[in-house]
Image (cartoon, rainbow over all chains, first blue to last red):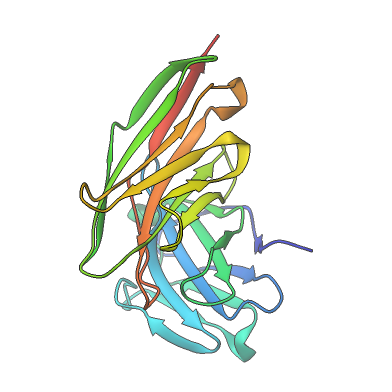
Length: 113
Length: 112
């Protein structure tokens, strides 16, 4: 069974440019998470979906970040415009339901110059 | 609100020695507790989880953790460290609503 797929793995952009990350969760997993991970720190939740519905986006900086999960499967996280402080690893995870084990993708390492 | 505290951002152990990683949590409801491991340039992988069954939980790669409600702790142990255990370890707490909180992580270095 394929795991959580994320692309791209690495992205380097200039500040003020837009960037998008894509995530394909494990088949059948209803819950999808986007996390931000800074170097030497634990993952911090940006947004959690249950099927198509964003049930927790309280930590998502909505002035520049947006996310969608069309048809309750794949998801895209966008930053527009990117700032220097957005440099981090963006992790996607999925689980069967909200209290179950989360399976993580390898992450996208974003560098903003 | 839930929170997780991992004591020690870096731990160095000798190969064959006991590995002990400390995790304390706060939660207003019975928690779900997890330990994850992260190798360089990879996502997190579940080691074990506590979901109110047995208080001693056995995981993969010889790791286990004990839930102690009175101490609000969920420390991770492995009797004998192996070089392949070098990684970063994260403790996490969740509740029935799926609100996950990860600790800051503990980097484990294994010396020959």
